[in-house]
Length: 150
Image (tube, rainbow, N blue to C red; front, side, top):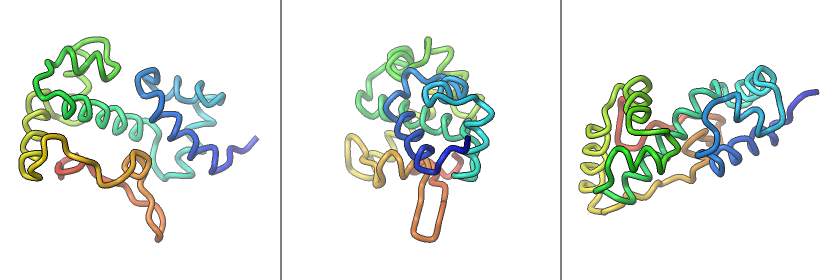
């Protein structure tokens, strides 16, 4: 049974709504009612990107939003509010996937907010467009706002 492109769009919506519950691609595929391999194959066909990469970017976006909502939050609080088990798991995620530490990310977000003269920066695109951006010419991948290295 082939998964339609519409179902893959729905999968991104499911990820956004359930980012705290979805820890990995296996859980994401199960949320959608598909095997991991079937889900990955069809997701990659639709977006030309592995769902694992999209999941990482969605989790990073959640971390950034938690930080931006409370600049004084500790790494432990940000970790819990972002769906991580503890601050060590958050640190490991950031270092392994983005080569950044928590304080480095937090300071970068503060600099970006200050440059924009806002306390909380507002995304120019919706969550869906950020995570798997599309334009009229087809698919393009958005980068992390204000961070050329992401």
